[in-house]
Image 1 (tube, helix red, strand yellow):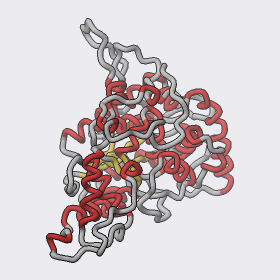
Image 2 (spheres, rainbow, N blue to C red):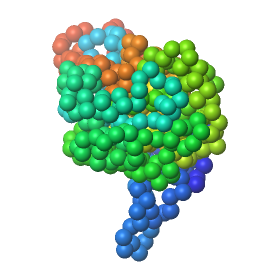
Image 3 (cartoon, rainbow, N blue to C red):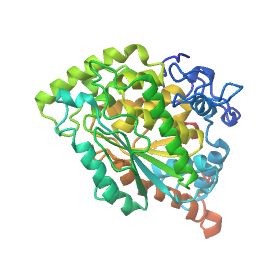
Image 4 (cartoon, rainbow, N blue to C red):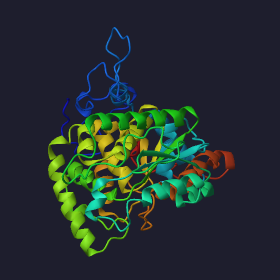
Length: 419
């Protein structure tokens, strides 16, 4: 097992130069191997049949292979922003977003997203039996059926912004439609305050599933990925992971989830405290950490985010559950965050601490706490607007508009901070 030093900020210890940005090697101290996985065993645990050489580990290949977005394109986008018919910086964060999209797409001007895709990862959590949620566990399976039928908030919001939705059952504690259960690891998870959520093998399989799902979506044409979540009790493991990876006191990261009362909140505090103690020695190993205090849905989202970054595909982050998985991915390689932007800030207090550690500024703050990918979908039109302004606005010379007396000014933001 390769250990990783504590990540104190959003990027590698040394901020990359433009030359470093094109390197295809991740910094060695920013990479963690999946727990207890032999070199010739794939993430799912199956030995390569008939292999005479150790099989390449897809997880390690992805983690080591994450590159920076194209900084040269980012500089070109920043220069173009300064030539558009407006005072420099007058579109605020839309300008930053447009430059980020250009860097992750590798072209200036950027193009609108043609196939934004939401993947909702569903799983039940044993900790729900401790009374930490306002809803019974059977709601998870019922909501999965609702997603498939197209009647959930994520479905409605996706249709309104030109996105599509896929749901994946990773660990729902019920039989679900075969169309969503291909990658199912188990039914439910362990109660993380007293036992592991998963075995190491189950965690590895879930991570591998998330990577495969990312590949499937990207190969099918997805050019923007959104991970969503569904699982009664899932804000409890999210709080545990974020407390561990930010070193914030448990009581500061615990929210009301689905709307719990004071008694349930006290039980949730105790659960997070005890689970945090159990996971304290595992923060340098993604699979071990996810097995102890995460769950199959968290593990799959982690693999999904790592593979998206490896495949140079941008991700619009949703709420606290997805961002907790993003922190685990960031622990494996800090470069992963360069391929993400945060759609919104949830009312869950842990979300603030996680985004702060990742160095991401949310686009919206609408007091949302639903999950499912809903907050990211609401933010998607802002991302599209940012792209359109950079791509379609006329420059001063094209429009025959006089420039400022001192000539065009570069917008006041640092390309290294947004790409």
